[in-house]
Length: 245
Ligand SMILES: *[C@@H]1O[C@H](CO)[C@@H](O)[C@H](O)[C@H]1NC(C)=O
Ligand SMILES: *[C@@H]1O[C@H](CO)[C@@H](O)[C@H](O)[C@H]1NC(C)=O
Image 1: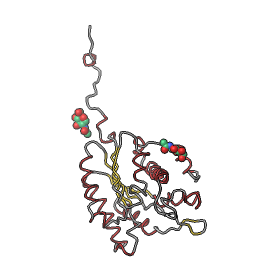
Image 2: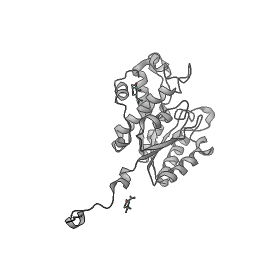
Image 3: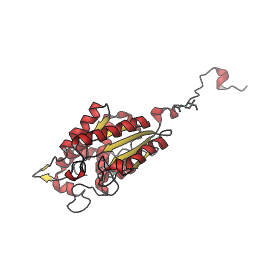
């Protein structure tokens, strides 16, 4: 006699939970300046070393970008288009990290405009069907005595204010990276410099270390990301303990 599950009256699960929104892998779109971009930022290492296999993404970091030029130059349009392309198959997250260039007098971007531009980015990500995450700007590794100079404090505060006023997810990369650089000190921090004397951009290993910081602070705040992260517990422990990696 042949028994089928149906004839036994057992419940048959028709809809696989694998296609539910919660279980979709993540597509990461990284928006930012040179500290996110390939060759000097954390973005490429984020995608290649912290994102678990089924997830994926694209680094749209653009060297020299402000929140204004990133839109005017067409990068932002590509990010939003990519949300549309990927949102059926993935949960799309867009990280937004600016400040290094916006803060320069020559950028012509005031702090108020910086905030308005960030808000508009997050609104458009939401309308496009993805989740925005604001990141406060990666610290520069410029020391005064034994401490890192806090020269992005205004952009950090502004970014957090936009996130809090608009119920947008954010993570404080500025403080997390600053704390780590302070903990390891100037000599160890110099090993991440893209070139001699470049205390802003990171070399390949610096990208791995700082992208791990990004990943760790995101996971700590947003546990729903845990299944989609490729861990490096050794590196995370060094960072947690403030030891040079
Ligand atoms: C999941 O798959 C089932 C069966 O194919 C389908 O009916 C349902 O609409 C899908 N749900 C989502 C969220 O795609
Ligand atoms: C994990 O971190 C350790 C310690 O920094 C490093 O030596 C190793 O290369 C990392 N592994 C990967 C796969 O990145």
